Length: 75
Image (cartoon, rainbow, N blue to C red; front, side, top):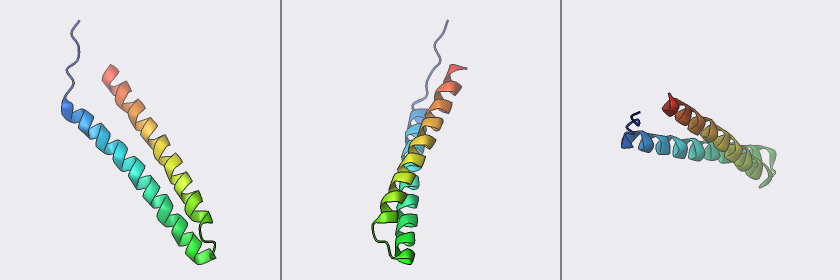
C-alpha cells in the first residue's frame, strides 16, 4: 500500500482559507455591531455581540472546512 503524496501547497491553501474565514467573519461582526451601535445609540453592546457572533460563525465555518479537507484526503 502506497501512502498518498501530500503537496505542500494544499496545506498553505488550507491555512489561508482558515485565516480568511476567521478574520473575515470577525471583521464583518465588528463592523455590523458598530453600525448598529451608531444607529441605536447603544455604544459597546452590539459591538461585543457582533464580535462574538462573528467569532462563532468563523469557528463553525473553519471546522466545516477542515472536516471537508480531511474527508477529501481519505479518498
